[in-house]
Figure 1: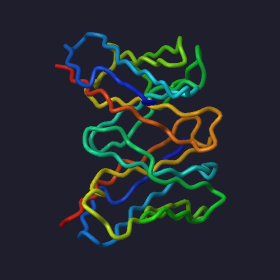
Figure 2: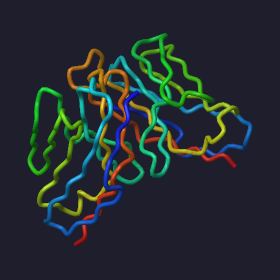
Figure 3: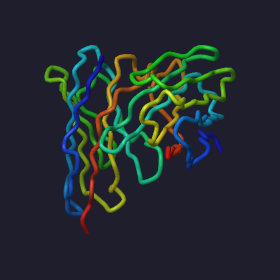
Length: 114
Length: 113
């Protein structure tokens, strides 16, 4: 089945530790995105990548880092510099160039920092 | 940058009635307006979208209208059913969706039996 796989689904970490969230897609999409979701806040864009080896900051990139070494993979690292890391993280992809603009989302990773 | 406002934050309707969710956007260059539905514990899924060259689009029980002059767009769900209960997000993009969407804060739609 084609889709986006995020792992882990739940993650607990101590304050000050870096954590990496995995996102893999087998849709052959060029563009991939990371969003953060907080209760009552909607989805906010962290980073996006339109092509391998290239990525751009979104609206709330501070304290996060990404890499795009392979088309299928777009891991997100939440660093110790992120002041409020506890959130639900969503990865998405879209076909590029796109004639629909549809984003396909994974099922999310819930990070809790203790 | 783009700013999207969405209202109401919670909407409760009787099963079979209609539901309307409204969004406004700030960037007049925005030309793509999708709506996503998110069920509990899952990622959002596209349910309908509209581009700026169209004023209305319908797909079975759901429809979206766009008023470019007023910079607002709305989601209409008719004959609501229990499975319509979810959180709905509107979004806007100036790049046809390719550069990432700006989302509203979401509407929790509750269908009362």
